[in-house]
Every structure is written in C-alpha cells, then in structure tokens.
Length: 324
Image 1 (cartoon, rainbow, N blue to C red):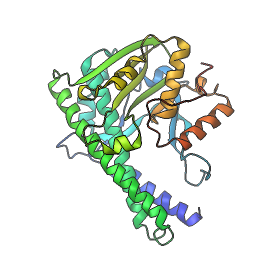
Image 2: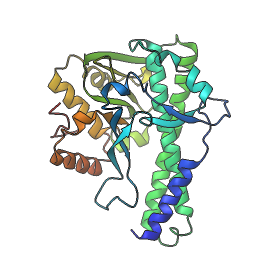
Image 3: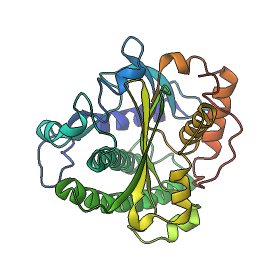
C-alpha cells in the first residue's frame, strides 16, 4: 500500500473519529459523549493493574503490515477503556444508573436489558462508522482513481451487508427500548452463571449461523445472542441470552453450555468466544502477558482466516488463557 493511500485512509479515519455524533436515545438531539460501556470502577478496575488493562484496538495504518490484522491488544488506562460516543451526558447518567451503582444486581432482568442495550448501541455505532468510512473510501479523490474494480465490488458487497446488519440491530434496539422503558414485558430470555474470577471482561452480541443462512433470514429474525462476562468483587458473572422468539434449540444449548463449568472448561469457553465471535473484550495485564507469543500468532491467524465464519461450532485448537 502506497504512502499516499495510507495518508488518505488515515485522514478518512480521523474525520470519522472527530465527527460529532448524536445521542442514540430516540428523539434526543444532544451530542454524545464518550460513554463507558461497562462500569469503570468496580468492573473494569477489578481486573486492572495500576488502572490499566489490555483492550483490542485499531492498529495505526502506518504500522500495520499486509499480513497482520487491522487491530491489536494494547495496554490502555481504564479511563479510556470500553468508551464510545453513544449517549449524551444526561441520558448516559440517568438511563443506566441502576447498573452504575456500587453493588449492581446482575441477576436482575433490567440489568441484562441495559447491558445488552449498551452493547447493541456500540455495535450499531461501529457499523455506522464502518459504513461511512467505506463510502468515503469509494469517493476519495486519491483512492478512487487507483482502486481496482474487484476492490470496489468487495466494498459494495460489504456495504450491502452493513446496511442489512444495521437494520437488524435497529429492530432489536426498538425491542430493548420497550423493555428498558416498561420493564415487565419479558421479551428476552437470559441466564446468569457465577464463577470464581477470570481476568477478562466481555460485552458483546453475535449472530451464529452460516453466511448463506444469515443472508436468507428476514430482518428482525436473525437469531442474536447477547453475552457479557463481568468481573466484580472477585467473581465473574456471565450473562447470556436472546430474544425469546430467537430461542431455538441450538441457541438454548449454547446459552446452557456456560453452566456448571470447571476452571479449565470456563477458560476454554471464554477463549473460544473471544477468538471466534467478539472483538469487544479486555484482559488483565497479568493474564495477557502470560500468553505465549506462539499462541498469539495462532490467534491472529485464526481470526484473519475465519473473519466470516459465524458457525456456532468452531474447532479452535489453542487457548489464550490456559495459564491463568
């Protein structure tokens, strides 16, 4: 990749990052602030070292090599960890106050709804930014004359998938907004499993299935799993669930597969989730620095070659967390 293209890509990324984004609460016109997706003091801090954690972040375009991923785990202060421009200050403070208290109740239905709502809004924001970035790439005066037709076609296909994904997530967002407002509809099914602390933190959602199956499903009918691994008070709380209308046998078995695990099984389940399904995770420095370099190489290779593998069953023959 030429220096000129890298400069153009970095300029596009900076434009998106610096753009003012509106609060994602319906009807609100106020600008969003950098919201902490999970409680900074209590959840993220519980696995930090000197108030730092390792989080997956985007790699600088001038540092990434062609054979590498576009992101990497980087040591980051908890003041910046898991923060995205999602909500205005009043909504960020008031809507989520029941999960920002000193002793949140993770077994509570509304807690699951609020955690899942934040995770979903994060994914929508990420997709909107990615969509805008690729639209700007296609229109950029430096990149446009150079980019091949094959690459243009790939971006077009990506944008089609991105638009479809955003519509699906917005349909789920509407349902979560009803739940967090009314609080008694029970449209979502979830389970909570509690274990001794594992030094990782996850908030995420994913849609399992083969690409052809996912593409053929109508908007709103794509089965989506919400999962949160929350370290708190020397324990790890795993909240996993879905919309009740999405609760088929495969998804129910996946949700219940997190039940009654020993330490080795739990570490492997967390590993497979992070490797195969989600990008929104962080890890304690002590645990991350124990991962052998050769295992990190296996992780990067697997992610690179399975980016579009959404199968609920994947054969991952390594474990990032075997030594924790």
